Length: 362
Image 1 (cartoon, rainbow, N blue to C red):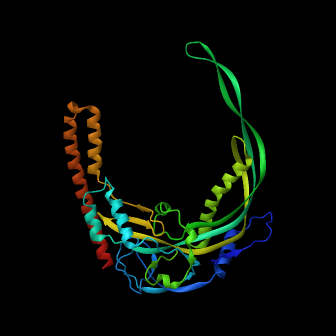
Image 2 (cartoon, helix red, strand yellow):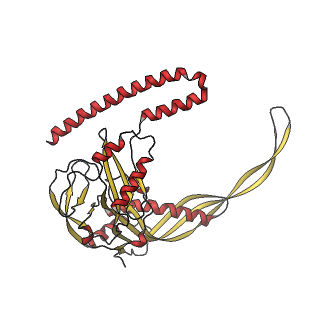
Image 3 (cartoon, rainbow, N blue to C red):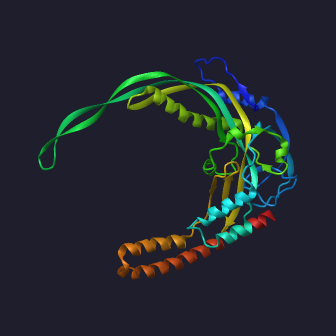
């Protein structure tokens, strides 16, 4: 059994219940622990230490870590999902992934080989549960069919079947018990990218013990439980809307109003594993992530505009025919020159910014 922090509000009155205040009360009553952490001044990411050693660069933005160590008080994690994917397996997944990036620059392997390092890290998530009761008012649309006559442009008359909708009022109540609604509790990684790693095998969660962090870092949550619950409500709302429409029935549904009571609210702090590689290409940061439980992967990569231009021109040449392809060859050569000048200018500008940043950090 895992530790849930829960609160059962009294019978709802007509006035709106302040659920965020209830969540705040839960946070104040939760168990906390003191943990040694280091914070990145560039992106704000805060992580625990691996073996009390401070890494040279930030796991999330690849910036130099110059901040000192310090103690941080956090809500104690209730459970953790340990790594099933080994580092060697993760490196094989990355190698397979990068080899399939046809439109990536040819020298990307070189950059990644020099800079990239696959690091294991636990990400903080909030898991919410609630027994919801939603009262709604809406409309049920039922299709019916009629025949109508019409005249075309030539003046000839025809008959056709037209679908029309008859609307009738509908109201009712839907109930649904939500369990383990996950919301990521860090802003250090793009949420869209993290959603690509789902689903998580929550059936394999085990009770948290601090020894699991002795050889693997964990990110400290930067999203508190109140805004986390608001994110969870958005996820719940999709399911509630689906169930309302199913309850209304008919061929079409309209939801005019709804009022949801969130009863028996509970939450827990959990840690989920990922393998993370952060590298720079032309001074821009890219990330590659692997779900440490299932092996599902997602990554960011630069694009080679030379390859893209070549493909576009090749397809154009095929479409025009070989006899008309000669003018496109000259255009392709000119585009290559322009692209080269753009890359040189872009690299020069970023080098100046990097030098300025280095002077400021020094």
